[in-house]
Image (cartoon, rainbow, N blue to C red; front, side):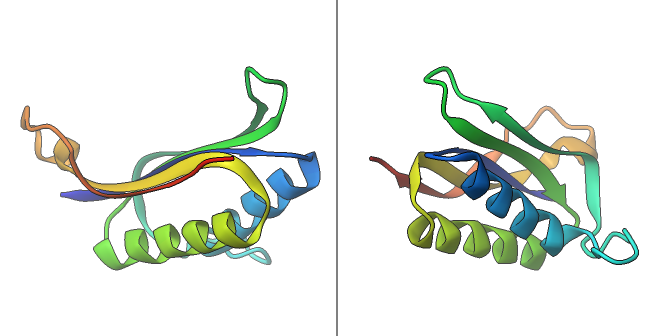
Length: 116
């Protein structure tokens, strides 16, 4: 079982998008040594892009080996969504059985949504 975080966030300016990306990366990778701090399974996708509305955005998908790492990153992103002027977006956490070779579907545990 893996523990997944997915987020899609939209910001008013690129600096806020960069601040969120840096906060996420600092939870997963040591900024001095580039060593992985939180083991994960599969790909770690964190993209800084532009939304269809032309706003700076972040898209994140990561599957952790440990549930505590999922909970910690979810709480960090949720807290930043509240404190930073995120225009809108969502962060979710779910159980992900992909590593078990079964056809089971992912199970959503919690979703936090912020609207304009």
